[in-house]
Image (cartoon, rainbow, N blue to C red; front, side, top):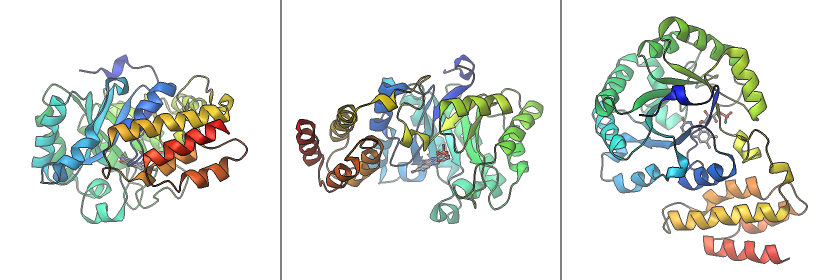
Length: 319
Ligand SMILES: Cc1cc2nc3c(=O)[nH]c(=O)nc-3n(C[C@H](O)[C@H](O)[C@H](O)COP(=O)(O)O)c2cc1C
């Protein structure tokens, strides 16, 4: 079993981001500058235990270079969490995380993710079901926010009393979406509560970290075990490096990195499995920071297949 205690202090985590941190992007990041821990995108257990299963299973694909890796699950039915947790063990993951923070309206309305903040009974059942499913094999963690509509530290206390192996706290309420700066003092409070209630739970802080240096400062200030970075990766694919080399990446390096991503995308996702436009986000990451980048992006984003994209990237390299 992966031991969080063996990770560096503080450890750095790549945040789960749906339609972004798939196995393809995780492999690219692992090659650029790997975090100490990866998460999958969130995967719905109720869907996984339904006829729609095959499509969702692909979201749980990973490669050894992405280790240690935690599968992130969400859903409503404890029975489906139990069945999926058993499968997660068999797939060889290093841990299982439960999403209790996603604020997307349709999801919350349905009673899942951030809605669990105000449904302790179901939360308890879900954690118990997952624990039963993974047995002694995997550690169990939760990623959440500091409240649903208003800040509610009793939620964090409740989770700490569940003696999780790790708790990631995003310093905003669900109602705040991403509209206000993350409140790191509340993350610091969660860390203090941890000392009282569950000393063995690792606390990971999340929200608006744009560099490793900033992450180290926040970890030191609030005495955190780990720092999770999500959107910071959009500005710098080497954000987890001690010394990022992104500023020294030439136009050609950046084009080559995008081509590497597109080739891996084409190898991983069969036509129709993942829309080609999901590559546009990556186009913005890589095709950036050099003269003519904007015009090139506009051209690349018109492509209707990965083959077409690769031809365009190849032509561009020769210009
Ligand atoms: C496009 C996108 C997709 C996301 N998908 C997930 C997800 O699947 N699971 C999850 O727990 N959080 C998800 N999040 C939230 C991030 O993991 C993270 O908590 C949030 O972006 C704040 O961290 P940051 O400021 O470092 O980006 C997503 C965020 C974005 C921007």
